[in-house]
Amino acid sequence: MTGVSEIKKSLSKIHPFSEEQLSLFTDKLIYKNLKKKDFLLKENEVSDGITFILTGSFRFFKKIDEGELTIKFFVENNWIADLESLLNQQPSKNYIEAIEDSEIASINLIDIHRLMDIHPCFRMLNALLTDLTISTSYIATINSKSPDERYQELLLKHPQWINRFPQMLIASYLGMTPETLSRVRARIK
Amino acid sequence: MTGVSEIKKSLSKIHPFSEEQLSLFTDKLIYKNLKKKDFLLKENEVSDGITFILTGSFRFFKKIDEGELTIKFFVENNWIADLESLLNQQPSKNYIEAIEDSEIASINLIDIHRLMDIHPCFRMLNALLTDLTISTSYIATINSKSPDERYQELLLKHPQWINRFPQMLIASYLGMTPETLSRVRARIK
DNA sequence: TCTTGTGCTTGATTACAATCAAGAAATTAC
DNA sequence: GTAATTTCTTGATTGTAATCAAGCACAAGA
Image (cartoon, rainbow over all chains, first blue to last red; front, side, top):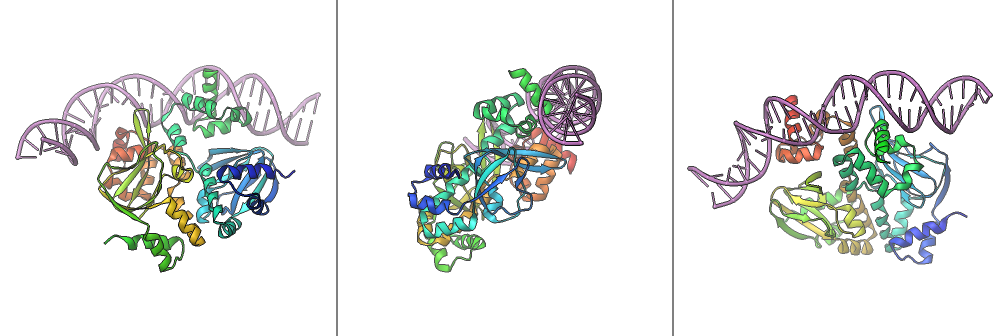
């Protein structure tokens, strides 16, 4: 039970790869278990590939002054990476940390490039990158909505996150203090 | 004078393409002139390629409620695109508008793919995508710095922008009202 | 089991940017 | 070149989220 089928399913969504091609890809995967609070990537490290989350969850955050700013959450059956660091092979400005104990499978950038060289169709893997970008919607929400609206938007888009992750992290993601989030919650439900 | 040399220079920065390869690329370029306030991309359109700015400037923004949120500025000798729309070929949630009269050269996504199929080294074009992402630093600044600090950071990073673009756009980029920016400027210099 | 610590809530206060408003300056249009 | 429109500045006021603070709930650890 390596969870390889979920990975193949994920790849099949972006392109109708043949079973043989899928296996070429999954043969390159490196499996790992991370404990809660382990880091997948730290500031100044260079991201060396992309990681599929088999089980568990992660947060993508940035250290600022004394605090931390949570930029994204990632849960099982999704790919995760620091795009800025990965594409230009430059030191990351961010952290990726396991929120829960997690099982992951990673593929190296070098192996991805080799695959692309062998089968041009693997350039379709680029489509995976979209989910790794910071969406303009997120910025718009943070920037122009009230705390109440931001929370309600999260309730709509990712209701599962709210009970799964500590409120301080949710608050950080929504760009407000834990106190404010607590009051928002009291107001809303 | 097509400005093709600037484009070759830009490509050479990401990979040592041969002169022949560079020409294969530039042969596919489509040139165009845009007037101030013309749109390169509008909401719900699907981005069909990437564009090199030969002269002029653009702003990447999103409509929110009654207003607009400027997310990025782009000036000459840089590539521009809506990554989210381009990679997944989905309708854009954003606008790209010329701030000044501009000359541009665009290459189609289909042509990029063809190039990648012919010469695997063209997969290095992916490195161009980094500049098109929204950086976590931007979010951190918007989210955790005071208006004064945000302005000073812009003074350091992009001093040329401040006189080149209208203050209402700068204010929108810095996530504050034009009134606040005006007061910040009065305080700071 | 008790202790220690972390996370969450609630309260009081404060700081500060948004808003509303009006006039000046600058740009655009005719 | 003048009029018209938009942008920028300055002022007064207000709303609201951050901050500071204290107590509670719960979990982890000894």
